[in-house]
Amino acid sequence: MRSGMFGGSGTGDTSGYGRLVRAVAMPPATAPPYGGVFDEIADSLAAALVGTGFETAVERVVVDRGEITFHVRREHLI
Image 1: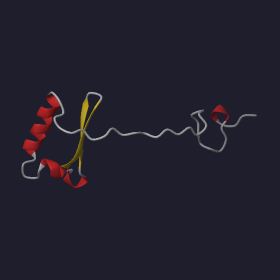
Image 2 (image 1 turned 135 degrees about the vertical axis):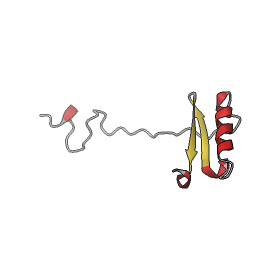
Image 3 (image 1 turned 180 degrees about the vertical axis):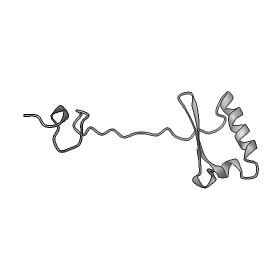
Image 4 (image 1 turned 90 degrees about the vertical axis):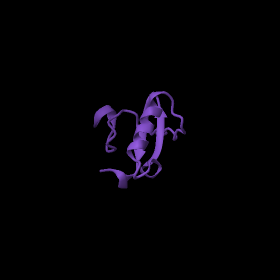
């Protein structure tokens, strides 16, 4: 007799994979130059942060799968 979806009972796991866990690996930081338009974007952001400082506000920059991500320190978010 089944109870719950896919025969699971009491675990809350409704995926059918029986608590299969996979670690998520985040991409590492990317060192400049970032390439193409990404360098222009980073330079524009650095120019806008002249008073604060790009290195102070931005924790790390990641270029992965054709996208750029700026990790901004919490205290510099509005």
